[in-house]
Amino acid sequence: ALLRTIDGYPSVVAAAPRVYAGGLISSGQATSAGMFMGIDPVRELTLTRFLDPLIEGRMPVAGRNELLIGAEMARQLTASLDDELVVVAPGADGSMANDLFTLVGIFRTGLAELDASFAVMPLGDLQTLVVLPPGRIHEIAVATTDPWIAETTAAGLADILTPGDRAIEVVPW
Image 1: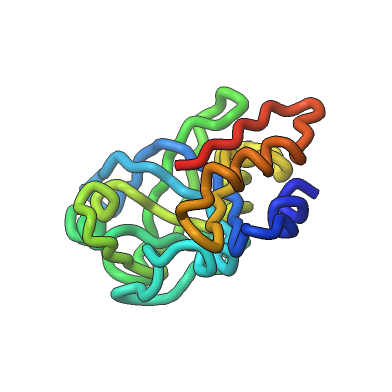
Image 2 (image 1 turned 90 degrees about the vertical axis):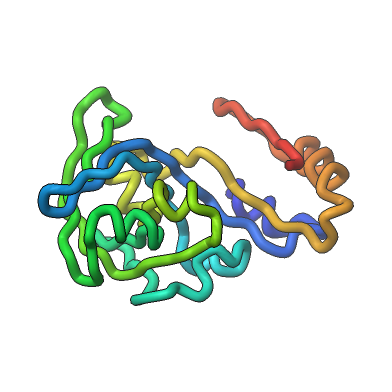
């Protein structure tokens, strides 16, 4: 319902839900600390360009424990396509979440920090990993018809989004 409301706002051209978690990724003897980003692959590609095109591989498919990592992280882990990576992160319920994920793609943003520290997977897969209920997300990123109207759009969305029992903050960045 929240995403439909945002999608229907006149100046919004794209919107994508996201979930985040910090954790570790291991391949063989190498381990890297990173930020996991759960995305809706179809919506994310309409919103941002950081995953388009991938330098190797393809987008992950939901429900298959597949992920993408940045080129620098792949180098540090000496990881290649189809490698199994161990993913460890704190669960939302206080547990320690861990699972095996298959590397299906490598991206290069041109920003060394992102390429060395971000792992991207389907939204539902990250929610399952960190025991986050399916209805819980951390943000909905939005693109407008014109970046100069971001503040006006944020104010308009803030007026029409009723938080109900959840805290919602609308920020034009």
